Length: 103
Image 1: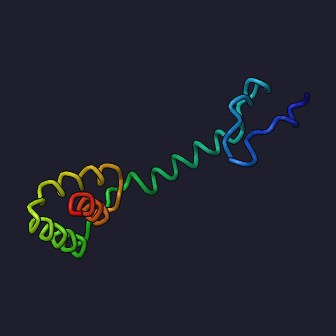
Image 2: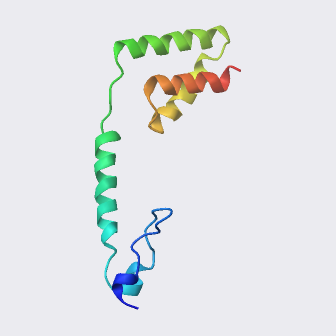
């Protein structure tokens, strides 16, 4: 079987062929492209710590005021921090935390 017949990836799922290097003796050429894309994506979207705007702070304060009415402000704040650390949007983190606690 020649090297040209060995696929670099699964055409249906797009996953890289884990046996490519073993079968051809060369690294999968798509592996470097994938690594470069992941590095670019992480740099562009995750490495930048975006500071919330004044409007976002005000929106969060409204969410926390509503949570306080239910006696759950501290719980919502703590839970929202977990979402923020998981890279969710600032306001979305508080909204999801509120929705989880106030049902």
